Length: 95
Image 1 (tube, helix red, strand yellow):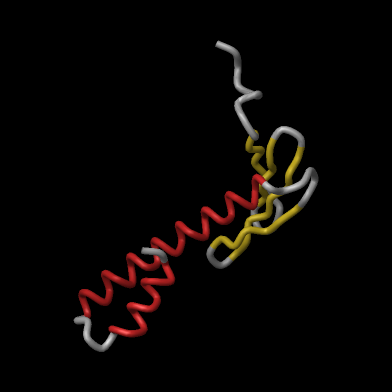
Image 2 (cartoon, helix red, strand yellow):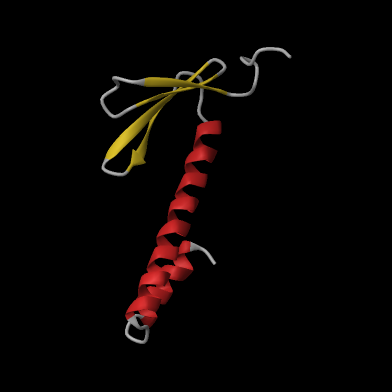
């Protein structure tokens, strides 16, 4: 089932569900929707062009990401913190 299926269940059967079942279904829907959105974001990261800048919804704020040679730089909402995330393991120490 995907999140759209759960949305339809909630819309169509809300009256027939008891409070516990409704809460359980709603929680599962939220987790599934979040997982689907995260997968879409990851797909978008790998399709970014060099030096492209994008925003990622992150609750009440946003996280910004910039594609750079060798990976991405993630910035917090006010760009006071940044983290480099390598595209692969080219920056790891050789063993």
